[in-house]
Amino acid sequence: MLTLPPGVRVFVAIARVDGRKGIDGLSALVRSQFAEDPLSGSMYVFFSRRADRVRVLYWDRDGYPYIHQKRRPVRKLPGLAEQCRMLTEARAEFTWLRNGSVNVQQQALRDFDQAMRNFLAGTHGYPGRRKKYKHEGLRVTDFTFAQHVQRLNRHWGQVQVPKIGWVRFKWSRTVPECKSYRITKDRAGRWHVAFAAIPAPVPAPGTGEVVGIDRGVTITAALSTGEALHCPALTVREKARLRKAQRRAARAPKGAPKDTEYAKAGRIKAREADRRKDWCEKTSTDLARRFDLIRVEDLRIKNMTRKTKPKPDPDQPGAFLPNGARAKAGLNRAILAQGWGLLAQRITDKAPGRVEKVNPRFTSLRCSNCGWIDKNSRQSQAEFMCTNCGFTLNADVNAATNIAAGHAVGTPPSAREPLESAA
Ligand SMILES: [Zn+2]
View 1: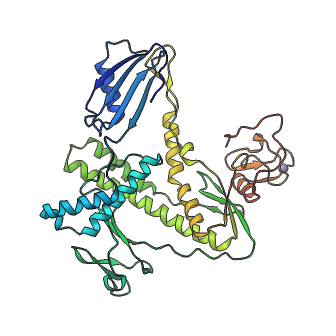
View 2: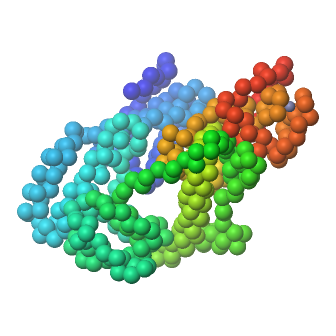
View 3: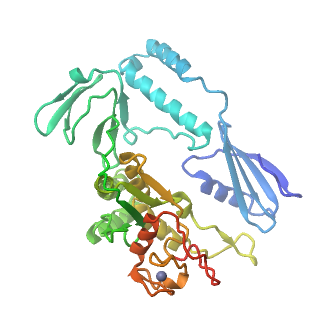
């Protein structure tokens, strides 16, 4: 599980791990519990109440805390078929369960099965618990499209949901004939119905045109054609309202007053997400229609938006030096707000086989005219002026042109080694 540094003492404690408090709450608990203890080189092992997860907390000789956690299933879970059989038994026993739709219940088990598979494959976290009023939704697969979905007029349609009846919905786009649909509730309290169908890819224009996209914070997407595309954000007033709701939520007493303020904040954030998604959809369709080949940087957004590492104070064990966490958190928020991942994903969906990922190395430092790479060429956030040939261009458009050209092939880095991250 964990290789221990030599000379580390091991303590084993049983603690009730409160899921809501998480690991931060746990480490605070341990710190208070063992305040008298010489912490360096000590280790504590925690088992949760149900013993389905183990958390190990230890300090190295410099007083730097490490947390290692591992969840493991208590026992082997029954498979999907077995769970469905158990569902049948349980339905025979309980009236309230029998009152629900068996198809919907089986689909919930299927979703859970997929979540467990993802967890065991190591790509996803442990499935969370669904909460009433918060995670509402269901999936229906047992229906006949022609019978159970109807169009009422230009703007409205209706769907017959098992055990609920006819539910009207806004006919916002062409509804394809399909075999399953999902009903969800978002954090702004709006209900959605999504009919599952894979749309046909956007046809290529056939002009042979290639475009490069440079994704950034100031300009969301700079194209090699010189266009600057901006993802819409919240207005200044909306941002102020969001901050106000969040501040009031933090100070409000628990219960209804707090929930009301959080709901307000949730509605504003949902609006922001709606705008971002709408922009990503429109932009990706537009790009897929206009260009034959679309090149984007192969960005590791997960890695780029990591938290900063804590910097332990060498003079005071257990204390930490400033590490720029606030500034990085702000940048991360800005990056995530640009919807980079979603844009690239949607372009790939709509133009399958016509998207190429390019190594982002030096794309912002290379001169798109002569290929010279020098960090001094980038004069400021917006300006690029080549130190070799004097070529000038908007820095983001220059980067996009490099991306459109494919790999950054050019003059190898000069004696003054440019910084990869200087941009
Ligand atoms: Zn140049």
